[in-house]
Amino acid sequence: MHPTRSTVILGVALAASLAVNAIALWPTEKPAARRGPPPSRAVEAPKAKPSASPAEELRKCEDRLKARQAKDALRSLAEALRVSRDGASGKARGKDDLDDLRCRIAEQQMRDRWREKKKETLADVRKSLSNAEEQERNAASEARRFADSLDSSAADRERLAERYRPVRIARMAEIAAAIGAEPVDYGAATEAVKGLWVDEDRLIGEIYGAAAAERFAADADEGRLTVLSIISAMSGGPLPDSVF
Image (cartoon, rainbow, N blue to C red; front, side, top):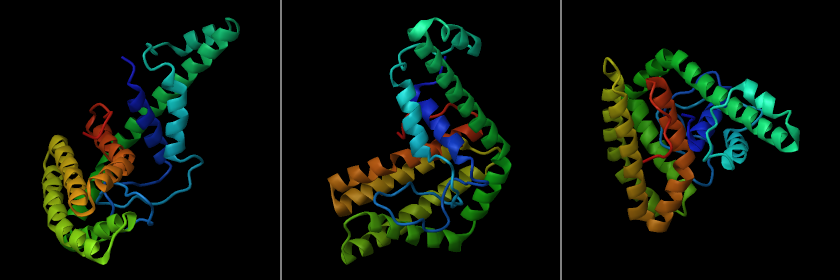
C-alpha cells in the first residue's frame, strides 16, 4: 500500500535534511534561541543551508497530496505519463501521479541514506551518551532553552532547571542502555525518547500551566516526529504518523 500522507511528508522533509553531512539523534550544544522549543536530543546536528527548508518541503508535499489522500497512488510512472496525454483533466492527474512518485522516491532515498549512515550515527550517539559531563551540560542547556521559549521568571527558570536535570539524566541512561545493546534495542530507545518528551511536557505544565504545555508540545511536534522517523528508518520499521 502507498504510505500515508503524513508518512510521505515526513519522508520528504527528512530527505531534504540529508543535505547536512552528518546528523545525530539528540543535540550536544544549545541551538539558536527561538520561540517554541525543538525536541530534546543528545547529539547536535550541524547547520547547513539547503535550497528549501524541511518545513517548506512539508508544505509543498502536503499541498500535492491533500486532494489524493483517500485514493490509491500505486500507479507506475508509465501510467502517469499515459494519463497526462488524455486532455486537460488527464494532465492534472498525470502531474499528481508524478508528484506522488517523487515523494515515494524521496522517502526511499531517505531510508537508504540513513541505513548507510547507521553505523556512524550509532557510534556518535553512544559516545555522547557515555560522556557524563556532556550530559550534564546538555541538561542545563535544554532547561535554559525551554525557559527562553516561554514567559519565564527567574523563579520559573530555577525551578525548571532543578527539576529537569534528574528527569533528563535518567531518561538518557535508558536511551544509552538501549542504544548500547547488541543488537540495538530500537523499541526500548523509542519508548525512552517518548518518555523524556512526556516528562518535559508534564514539567512545563506543572511550572507554566496547561496552556503553555500544550503550546510547547505543539511547537515540538515536527521535530519530535523527525527524531522518531530517523530511528524508524535506521531500524527498518515503518515511519510514524504521530509522536504518541
